[in-house]
Every structure is written in structure tokens, then in C-alpha cells.
Length: 460
Image (cartoon, rainbow, N blue to C red; front, side, top):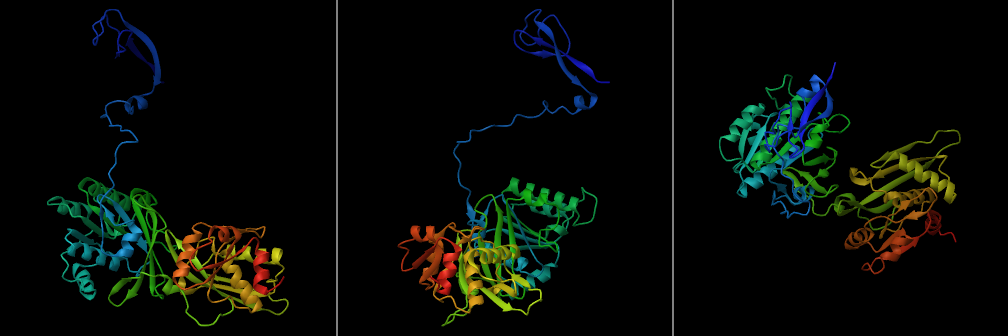
């Protein structure tokens, strides 16, 4: 049974004693100790009381002067863009992606360029032998880069080796699922091993000022394998996306404590490795002289970068009684169903007896809600066999009421479209009012999706 804890408090100086005594030991006053009722203390609480015995933590003001962290550029502009300007000393970065997507190739290119620029770089591979990494470096034309290479999977051996001399500026661990800590029982890749190994590596990076990069495996769903706490422990999480059958790769920042999220870097897989794509719109646009039915150009926005992509739609009429099919590649199928419902309920168009196919050209994936109007334009064009003018772009969010809502960064989208030679833009009325004077772009604004459909079909 728990018993109450007795304590005696000096009325002169506030000192606390565990038993009564005539004179206070701190202020030397006599007969000032008075018993006060304390909290009920159990043996467990008495043993695990954390309100004493520790060291004081320094508390600083929120408005104290802060110096911006220095960046170490990798020499790969698209990689630096996704990182927010380059690596930060003492930061931990986690990069994940499908097998064979190019994670090791990209990191080896970045490590070699930083080493050639004068930084000390260590590359530890737990999946490949050192000779395999050397052969890849020679194939990429980076065999002369002064990168310190090792093939190891013991976290203790790696940290012991790196602690003997000057710490490297960049440490690449490929991959964290192959690391093993002898402090924890279990095979490499288990939840406890991944968490323990990552914690020790991150602690070393924070203490020694090393920029740490961890390569992470992904599950069949595309999420990073291992405990979810791994993403909370690191400062930056990068996802390497793309289809191996397509040429392009996208490096997307999901989390970044030192920069903005949703920034992307675009790469193209070449025989000599991953090459930067300075103008991503060139990958996802089809250049044609004449307009084609069911095709619309949409200026998507990824972080601060506008990317023009082509949205393609195909509508096929079926015989009565057949169940129509809805197939979507690169967009949300639920949002397509919503756009079709609004077109039927608010605009008088019928898709109930037609199969609908929607595709984002180039294997690109669009999550921007501003694509609603471009998708609607492609669907109406495919249904009516009327092509959208090839020099036009369209963007805007469609509400269930049929209204067209403005979207963020309209002038930035229009500016990018104007740079690539587009002359007209089909946008919500609010964007048309705010975007007047955007170069040579001619803006046509609409309040509702019904007005937009009437414009495309030449009604009224």
C-alpha cells in the first residue's frame, strides 16, 4: 500500500528536508521547519521520479539571432533543388525508391562530384562489394573521384572507423536496411535493427557535423520500408519516382526541415547515368502542328516549378446494355468520376453509355487540383470531336456546383506557358482578372463549367 511522503519546509528560505530538525541546514534559522502534506508516493514513483538528478537545460529566447546553415552543393542542380540548395552539415537525409530506379547511381554521382570539388566523402555499401561500386563509377566516367569506399554492414565497425580521423563531410549508407547493430538482437532489416542503426548513425552525424544520406528500401505499396519513426528521425525525406520503362525520373522532397517541401528535381536516364533535365516540360509535351481531339495542355505546379504536361482523353460509345469502363493513368480515378458527374449534372453531357480513358502523357503523375478544368476540356473535346486549340492551356478547380475556382500561383503557370510559345489560356474568371498583362498571353475567363462547355461547343 502506498504511504504518504513526509517533508518539512523551512518557512524562512523554503528549503525542504526529509525529517524534522531544530535548525535549518541552509539558512541556520531555528524552529522554522514545518511539516507539509506531500503527494502519495508509490515505490515505483519514488524510483522513477525524473524531477531531480538531471542537468539543467539552457533555455534561450525565441527571437535570438540565428545564422542560416551553410549549404554544400552537390554539383547536380536538380538534386540541389530538391534538397533546398544542397546538403546541410549535420543533417540526415533519407532517400527511397523502387529497386533499379537509380538511387545508388544518383548518390554515387553526387558523392563523386562533391569529392572532386574538395569535400571528404565516404560511401558505405551494404548491398554491393566495393569492386561493383568501382565498376559503376568507371561506367559513369567518375572512376578518378577521391571517394572513400567501403563494403560493410556493421554499424559499430563503420562508426569506429569514421571516429578515428577527421569526420567526412558526406556519408552515404546504402542501404539502412542492411545495417546491423550488435546492441540489438535480430536480423538486419527488422524494425528494431533499422531504428537502432539509424539512431546511432544520426547521432554521429549530429555530433561530428557530417551530412548523412540513408538509402531506404520501399514496400510493394511504394512506401519506405521499416518503422515509420525512421522518417521522423531524419531531417529530409526524398522519394525517387518514375517508371523503369520511361526515360524520366523525379526526385521529390516529401519532408525538409531546411527547405520547402514538394520541390522536385527531374532527371533523364542515359547510358552515362542520370542527366539533369533543365526544362521538364519538354519531356511531357507532344509537339504537333494541328490540334488533336481529346488532348489538352495543363501547367502543373510542383513546389515552385511549373511543369507543362499533356492530358489525353478518349471517349468510346458503347452499345446499349454494356457496362462502361473508366480507366485512369496518372490521375485520381475518384476525381475523374467527380468531373464526369459535374459534366452530366451541370452541363447536360452524357457519359453514362461511353467508356472513358484518361492518360497523363509521359507517365507523369498529377495531384494538382488545378487539373480539373484541363481534364474537363479533354473529355469534352473527345466527346464532341472538337480539338482544343494547340496554342492553348487550361487550368482551374471545378466545384461540385459547377463553379470554377481559382488556384494558387496562376501568374507563374501563365509565365511558364508563355515561355514555351502558348498564346491562350482557358482559366477561371478570377485568374483572368488578376492575370491581365501577363505578357502576350490571351486569357479567357469562365465563371462556371457550363460556360466553359458552351464556349468549347460553340453554343450561345
